[in-house]
Image 1 (cartoon, helix red, strand yellow):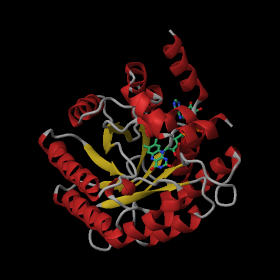
Image 2 (cartoon, helix red, strand yellow):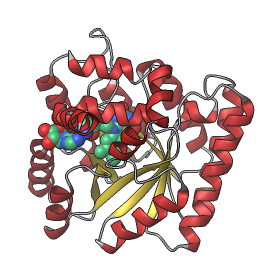
Image 3 (cartoon, helix red, strand yellow):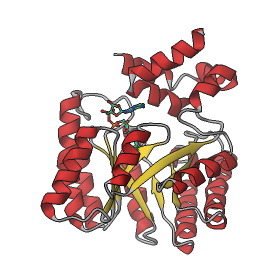
Image 4 (cartoon, helix red, strand yellow):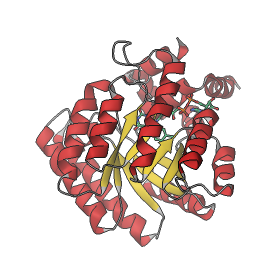
Length: 302
Ligand SMILES: Cc1cc2nc3c(=O)[nH]c(=O)nc-3n(C[C@H](O)[C@H](O)[C@H](O)COP(=O)(O)OP(=O)(O)OC[C@H]3O[C@@H](n4cnc5c(N)ncnc54)[C@H](O)[C@@H]3O)c2cc1C
């Protein structure tokens, strides 16, 4: 119930404007978003690399309303690859298609995605297309498949809460696509998504077991110790080496778990979002864990 309310509020434009101007909410959001500039993200990436973690940088922003804004986002992504190279960061990039104009003009969006993927390839790097709400799932998978037919420096994300995901995983594996497996962060109707957490978790494990033996380098993105243990157990039972896949977690969440996985010899990547448009991302993180909301409210009333 609380999760549904918070996800609904994450789409509220007025609350977004208020929060983004409010000094306190900006400060609390810094737990999940290191800053509004690429410099802030680079500083966080440097610290993560020094601790043994690789990173994925993400310029926050969704659903742009003009072609200019979509093209500006594309330019920012292209610049990120140069910056990663000059700073010698061990990191790649994650991006959202609605930020590149998916809702405005499919051709414009696809041309930008191709430019970004080719730029990633030139740098010997990689770009991941995040998965947004279900109205975008089919279009995202189709666009990723079309662009990957021209350059393979790109992968995408599959959400275990969606009932369709097993077919999507099999189709992407057939095309040799690298997949990040997540549970899913949006509010979805029960006819297309499992309402019960136990089913989402069971599907996460089932999809992980389809993905890992493929020989493709995938990412298991979760903070859930049970999902992580199931992955470790399965990989060990199949003789899949610790260097054949990676765990991924979000900046500011379960640093203890990130460090203990590193100590055990697993690869761990931290997703580092930055930018001024942090409100929807921040609200989805509050929705995932009521304790985060308590932390926020305690600060608000202090
Ligand atoms: C690297 C990465 C990329 C992602 N990309 C996408 C994407 O493209 N599309 C998409 O829909 N979703 C994405 N997500 C979000 C994902 O779908 C989940 O919403 C999120 O990871 C929480 O689920 P969980 O697997 O951690 O398990 P949960 O069952 O939600 O949580 C398990 C445990 O993890 C800890 N935890 C989880 N969330 C938080 C939090 N916010 N604060 C503190 N502790 C927490 C708690 O200890 C909790 O008990 C991504 C997640 C990661 C880690």
